[in-house]
Image 1 (tube, rainbow, N blue to C red):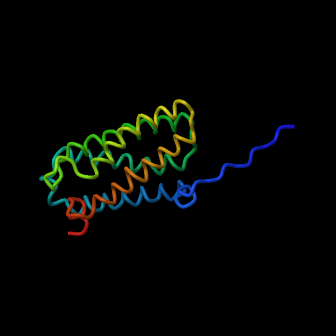
Image 2 (image 1 turned 90 degrees about the vertical axis):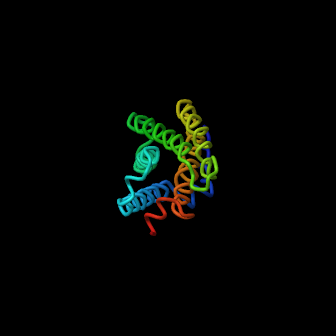
Amino acid sequence: MASVAPPARKSLIDRWLPDRVLGALAWALLAVVIFAVARGHDEWDRVSRAVWFHLGTIAVVLALTPVMLTRRKGDRRHRQLGWIWAASMCATALFSLVIRPFSGWIFSPIALLSIWALILVPRLILQARAHDVVRHRSTVRGLVIGALLIAGFFTFPFNRMLGQWLFG
């Protein structure tokens, strides 16, 4: 008679931030970005194309994140949406690298997260193709927390454009 393995214990991050919470945070960040952009409509003509493309690709990622986290995993639709999510995440990271920061530095500290995202997204794809569900899930959660939510939070303070539009 085969013994049944005990269920895997959830990590601390999984217990504190389940997928539904991460999805809700992504939706909330998207709503704040949309609100900030709407408030800044008087300055739209001064915004570079790279910034608009960056905002557009991040909107796709933020909109798909809750869908990807809460729907059924591994089916054809998940894979299709995953390719769109991954391509949009890479495009977001690439566009963030060509946006010149106000500080005059070549790169802002957020650029490190963009470079990290460009490393992790191909890894994420390889994990999915290898059916390494545990690592794939961990990488997705890391990208959502680090490259979306933390980087997204830091787009609002420190005299950045979205922060000025939102609070100004």
